Image 1: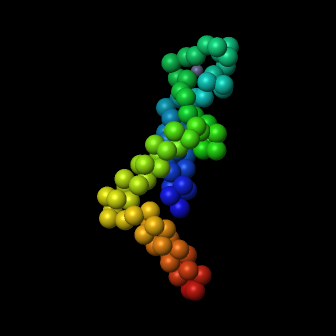
Image 2 (image 1 turned 180 degrees about the horizontal axis):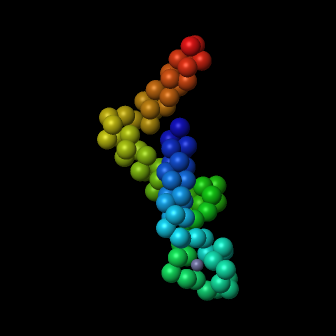
Amino acid sequence: MKERLAELMHIEWLEVMAKQGYHARNTCGLYYTDTCDHCRDGLVPWANLPEEVKEVNRRGVTRILAYLGLTPEMAEEMVRAQKLQRRQR
Ligand SMILES: [Zn+2]
């Protein structure tokens, strides 16, 4: 669950950056070694992100959950319970 939330944060960031005209270096259209003002690192799918960048989002999720008074394990349990409830309706 924590991993999925971290990925969703990344997806949101990708959308915001794309709306602002930013792009990955390999989609710039300039020569591979050149960059423009709108080239940004990290504008790649979650699976392609370096672990240290993913870790930033994971820490962000932990921080948000802590703000809500939850540990990742508590949040996991809440999601599991909600899914179970939905199935029983
Ligand atoms: Zn560019």
